[in-house]
Structure formats: structure tokens, C-alpha cells
Image (cartoon, rainbow, N blue to C red; front, side):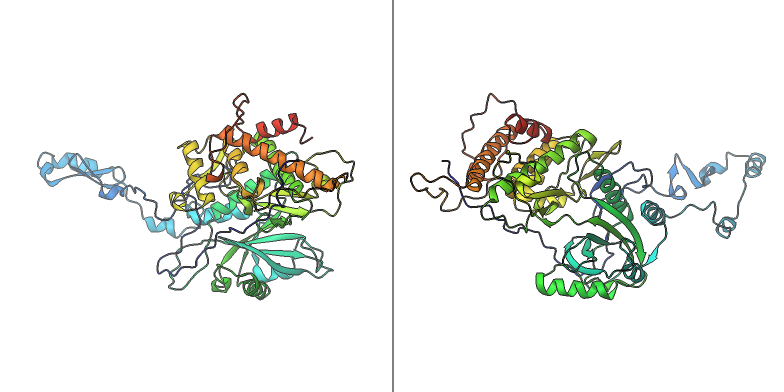
Length: 497
């Protein structure tokens, strides 16, 4: 009987944001280079804070070949050249000059006036939402459009991210039917010397919505279900602030209390189907933990493989917080065949979320380059960012399915955790038969060991010293290069159906 350790448990490694005081403008979220060809999005990408730009000087300040360009299309000679020009010639040139009153354009109806890029981006976001009008925040929450008005709506805060607060909504006190991400929108310069919540540019939120809609259509599922999006304006609702305070007192929070926003602040509300808890918070079953771990691994791999085939997808940020787990009440019968893709065999179902750094075709490539400061972080997650950069180089718009394989290997909960002191399964009494759960768990553990070994061999890449000296015996196997290769190999091994 192979060595067998206790069911895997997750140590929370969630990164916490630290609120900061600033006397400069609040900068919206924007990757160092976010590239998209969405028809409703501005063509020019946003520039992240601290990124240097080169501005062209206005035509009134450009001097070319001893001639001063004063107005567009009108060149006046320098004084040293005037003596060479006859009065008649100068008069003839000036007679062709037309002077227009620019104030007339400013006082018109504005139909021909170019809209500021920020306003254009906001309007593009609104048009992509479920409602094309900006609603009052408190009114929206009280008359939540995704639920029946005849029943009460229960609200709770279920999480937070760097640029959003996440609330759960349901019409039952026991369950959460959907989650609502409240994303403050950046609308201009804000001068403040007190902590202020981070905001997102409308371009970034539009990109997130369009990608989420796209991934919702991946054949076979496995990605979060989009329920709707709305732009609202107004003071942060007291009901949500109360839930925010409860969450902070019980769970802790690194976010700034959103009451700091004023009455003219706009938000984008993104509604998603509730898909369970994230992998960081999951506690595996005592008797079936390894079967559950194997199920998570292969369900995530299968979803990535389908997305690779369908839209040339790379997640590029698939840490434990981006994988949601919903537990099922049914358990497999003793005669059910081994299949780690089956929710009934594993008693759980996985969902992939958050595509802020993802690469996919829509149909042209959409992608984001990771900001340089991210590579300075410490830990396994940041090690992987650096390893991914070394693989991709500067070709961030290209399709590199190997990055999906890299995340499958280094995600701690998708492979064997650090061995405990006792790794040997208890010996059975002579003549006793092992329980079905014990047999299945040992098979799952053994399978995951082989998967890890093959993936390390394929990537020639190891994130931990614990396995750096492992002798691989798979030189005859063709290296895996994608989640699709991994799934096909798993099918050949009869681990998945």
C-alpha cells in the first residue's frame, strides 16, 4: 500500500492591502499595458501610475528650419528673413489667411465638439451594462432588479478585493444566490490627505465585463456565470456599510471604509452567480480529502483545456483565490467508476473567476502585461509571475498555453501538500478489508504524485526545494505543453472520462 498522508488542508496566504495616506491624485487601476480590441472600448490604452510618457509639444511651440509655426498651416518668417521678402508678396500671403472665432465653436450645441476620453469611456461602459441608465445607488439596492419584489432580500458581505467590495444577495437567510461586486469608478483627480478607497477606470471594468461574458460561454462550463452589470451613483447605502462593519469586526479588513466616497461617486455593480468558497478557505473532508483534491485538479484542468481550444485562453493569475468550490451533498456509490471529472464522484464542483490578467481571443487578442512592480514581490505567487515572464518574454499578446500548466503545478492545493510527520496509512488487521473511501483516497494520492512528476518533467521548472532533487524517469514521454495535453494524458491513463 503506497504512502498516504492526511487530507490536504489550506493555509491562507491571501495578500492583504495596506491603506495609505496620500496628498496626490488617486490613481485608478490599470495594468502596465492593457490591450483590447473591444468595439466599445477606447483604442488608446490607459497609462498606469508612474509610467513615463512622451508628450508632443503643441504646434505653437515648434520651430522648424528657422521658421516659427504659429497657427496650423500658417508659417511666419523670422525677423532675419523679412528683408528678403517684398511688401507685395507678403500682402498676397496674408490675404489667404482666414481667422476663425474659436468661441463660436464653444457656444454651439456641442454636436461637433469632441467628448473627453473619460466621459467616452464611461458611456461605453454604461452601454455594455444590463441597464443603459445610471441609477441611484440606494434605490437600486432597495429594489434589487434580479430578485422578486414580493420577497425579502438578505444581504451580507462575503469578501473583498483590491478594487471592489463583494456582497452576497439572496432571498433566503441560509444561502447566497448571487454575489455583487461593487467597483468604485475613477472619474478624475481627487485631492485628499486621508485614506481613500482604490478606484477602477471605466476601461478596465468594461474589459472585465466583456471577458466575463465571453468566458461564461466556454463549452463545458467551469467559469463564473455572469448575471448582469449596472452603473449607479450616490452615497454608499447604509445597509451595505453595516454589513461592511460586521465583516471587518469578524473577519478583518485591509480596505478603506467606503463611506469615504461622496454623493456624486459612480460605481459599477457586477452580478455573478454564487459558486461557493475560494480554495484558500476550503477544508477538505477527513475521509475523502484526496479524492476531492484530485477532483479540483482535473475539473480546473478540463475547464482550461476547453478555453484553450475555444478562445486561446490563458488565465495568467490562477492562484487559490481565483478558484471557487461548491460542495455537493451526494456521495458516490461503492460501485461508481473512478472519474475525477464527475461531481458525484468527488462531491464538489469548481469554478474559475477573475480574468484581470488573462489573455484570450475576442476574436483578436485581448491581454494585459503585468506591471513591473509585481515582479518585486516575494512568495510562490510572485515567483510564478517571474517564471511566466521568463517564458513569455515580451510576447504578451501571443498564446502561450504553457502558462496554464505552470499554474496547475504550483497551486499548492492542486498537488500534494507538504508531508506531515506521519505519511503511512494505518495498517489493517489481518484479513480486514479496507474501506472504499480509503482505497479511493490512496489511489487519488498516488495519481497526484505521478501527475506532479510528469508536470515537473514537462516544465523543467520547480518552485520548491523539496522536490528539486527528484529523479524523473519520464524522458520517453513527450513533454506536456498545455492544459489540453494534460487532460488528454489523464484520459489515456483512465483517470478521467
